[in-house]
Amino acid sequence: MAALLTVVWSLAGWRQHTQAAAERTVTDDAVAAEAVQYLAATLANAIADLRFLATSNEVRELLADPHEPQLATTATEFISILRQKPLYRRLRIFDSQGMELLRIERHGRSLDRSPQSRLESKARRDFFEEAQKLEPGSVYVSRFDLDVQGGQIVQPPTPMLRLSTPVRLEGRSAMVITLNLDGDQLIEAMHRILDKRGRQGTLIDDQGYWLYHPNPAMRWGGQIGTEEKLARRDPELWQRMQASAGNAGVRQNTYFHPLLPLRGVADLHGALVDLGWWITLDHHDEVSAWYHILLTPPFWASQLLLLIAAFFVLRLQREAAERRSQAENESAAFARAERELREVRGQVYELSLRMQSAKDLESFTELTLSELAPVLGAALGAFYCIEDGWLQPIGSYGLAKELMLRQFRLGDSLLGEALRQHRGIELAELPPNYLMVRTGTGRSAPPHLLILPLWVKDENLGAIEFALNTPPSEQQRLMLRQALPLISLHLANYQHRRKVGST
Image (cartoon, rainbow, N blue to C red):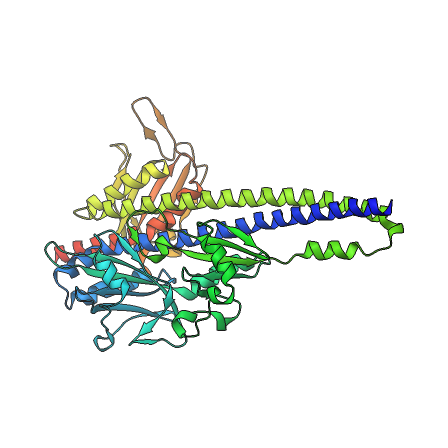
């Protein structure tokens, strides 16, 4: 009887161990999915910003005249853009020979243009050589490595990830724009993702060197000369990872998963695109230890222990099912968020391209309203610009001919209040006759009002007002947060051209 109970108990313990291992794998898959989603979204945002800068008016004018004062004008515009992007550490423009024409660098909270004496040639660096070979619009993603200045590793060691794209005038060799991402911020975000569920994680490049390891002495072995890497410390695990054909797996107590956030994305090139990185997560087999401890009581208590074990088995099964469901829901949510973010970035990018086609301030406001209103489902829209202390209506969307927009003093309306606070204002349940929309089949009164202020560097520029039939969705609000800074920059540019043209 005792032997039979022992066998039954062993089988129950082994089942618990197997279920716990499966549960850990599901959890680790969710952690890896979150890491891939974060890296993909972050790089997609940076690539979209780089492409936007490469097609900006300032860069086109700099291509034609790569000298002062155009360099100073471009530097001012780039600094205003980078100030809103703390992840971006450095932005450079190289001439066709690889010499820096312009370098904007972040030092703590400040952004500064480097003097002429500090500009360097990067003609032999991959992020210049490989990018110059590409077609405009394509982006080269460099290796993730330590910052090098003057041929020496910067101290303290500062990791960088560089994105480069060529820009050229017809018949000329390509210049290159390079955007440096702060590697410390990327690693810290990945560290939080890997460790937040109690797993000790590492980040490894395609050559087996640790980009992140709990022991700082193990990091960046290939560049600082220690040659510390997984391929040397645990060659069996590294061979197993290389033979996995890009799939996740587990060896003993180590889970591994490839990070390929950019594979399959068109017009991207570089090692990170083709080979990616790896993450590893350490397992601690608490269930096995607990199981062996429970096998030590005398056999006369076997039946009681079996009942206790059955209770724990059922509870673990239920918790495993709940966690699997939670992990699946989280993975679906991450995928949905990434898809929505890609859609938003695409909408903003297309909007930016269309805004650049406007010939003057009036056509710019009309174009902006006609692009935003369908996305938001707006029935009416109006665009106001500040002129001589007044909010003047410049453009409209969907307004009846007999409805005339009027001007406002800055302090006399909700438009002025939104600009004063630098925050949008949303009103719901408007009075029935507040606004009327007329169509060929009837008329209706939109119940929601949305006011969006426009400003650049604390300088108020204007505001946009929309009448909506329904409140904006979360995806629409995300699109507005991404689009409004670009609209403000373009508005400032068109207002400046209008002032220059009137003098």
